[in-house]
Image (tube, rainbow, N blue to C red; front, side):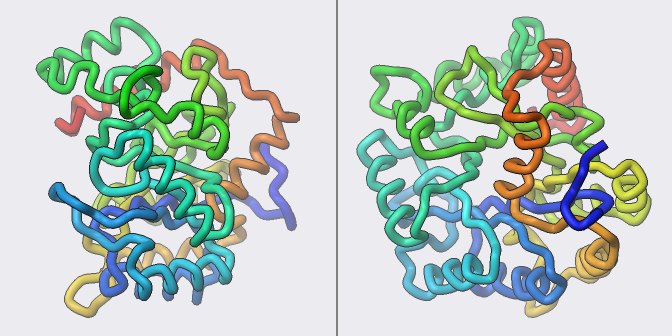
Length: 308
C-alpha cells in the first residue's frame, strides 16, 4: 500500500498530449480542473508547426504561451511532447529544449513521444521487451515503419538520446485499459538498462479521447481506484472532444467533478512519480516478468482495438 501525503486514499492525475490544442478548445477544460482543485500535466510544443497534418498551438504563440504560464503558476506541470508536431533533427530538438527552458523556466520533467515523429525515443516495436511480442507487433503492422524511429540511434540525424538523458526525468511508454496502474506496473517509475537514454519510464491509463477517458473514469472504476488505494495517470488529448461548440462534454464534467470530491491526492504527473520513486527508496529496477507481462498486455489490448 502507498502512503500518500495528508492521508489521501489514492492518487489521480492526467497527462494531456498537446495535439490539436488551442486556447478555444483547451482553456475551458483547465479552468474546470483548476476550479475543482485538480492539478495535472499539460504538455506543450516549444516550436511552431512548419508542415504536416498535426495542428495546434505552440509556445511561439504569445497568447498560448501566456495561458501555459498561467497554468504553471497555478500549480499545473508543463511537460514536453517532442519539440514540435512533426519530425525534428537533432539541431531542432536542441533548439526546442532551449526554447522550453527559456519560456517555461525549467527543464521538462515529463515527456511523451508524439505519434510518428522520427526522433521518438525507443518507439514502435522497440517499446516491447521480448522478441515474440516484437515479431507479433511487426506482423500486426505489416512491417510498416521498420527502423523508422531513431531518437536513440547514435549517428542518426534524429539522435537526441544524450539530450533526453540530461534533461528529462520521466518518459511515458505503455497506456493500458485499466484505471489502477498498480495492478499492472507496481514498480513504476522504472529503468530499462537496454534503453539507457531514458532515465525512468512510466505507464498510463488509456484515455486518448473523451469517450475512452470517460470509460476509464466511470463511477465503478473511480470507486475501485479508491478502494484499492491505487495510482492513476490518465493519458489523453483534451483537444479531442472535451469542449466543443462552446460546451463541456457532460459525461466528462460529471465524472471529473465526482472524483474531485473523493479523498484523492491530485498532483501533476512529475510530482506523483517523484513520490513513487521515493517510496521505492530510489530503486529503479523492474522485474523482467513484470515488464514482459506489461508488453504482452499492451500488445493484446492494441490488437483487440485495432490500434497496434
